[in-house]
Image 1: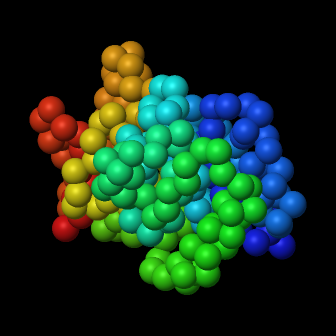
Image 2 (image 1 turned 45 degrees about the horizontal axis):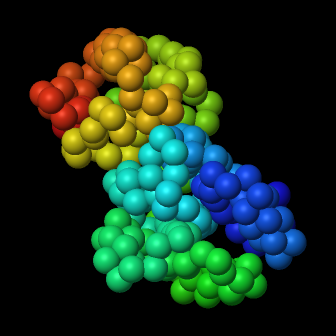
Length: 232
């Protein structure tokens, strides 16, 4: 995968169209991850690093515009291309307001899609730091390594579970910002049901316990909204 021209997240619920687009991009040297609904797309976006996203607008579970808005909360740089059967001006405006960089109306030429993707990637290559690529964070006297699932402290080291590490990394990437509960649930678990919401509260309690040796590191509840990691 190191010789790939780029990594693309494709979210398209039409299996035939999804396969054709994936194949067309793969033939041009891109690595393409195909998801079938918006919630699956958000979960995979959180667990992988992508150079560009191609999102169908009419998706099950979470529509393309809502998915783009959630992606923009955690990543302002990654380019987003919408695919849609709608051609009305207001739909295009809604797409750009949701954070889209380009918009193709079905049916479209696969060659045109490839050319637009290549043009966008040429413009955006090397611009800004993708915070999602970060794996190591300093939190007061703690050193958190997401890749190793480790939380190191002079008083002792701790091994985290994958879910604990994923939740903590989201908080670290948005330090001093309010992170909505629903976004954490959808990105880590792929759903935001009441039962999983209770599970998230348990994970937050565990993380607070793991970080209690440094009083300057706090995970604060923002009532009715979500959580905020404060350091210092």
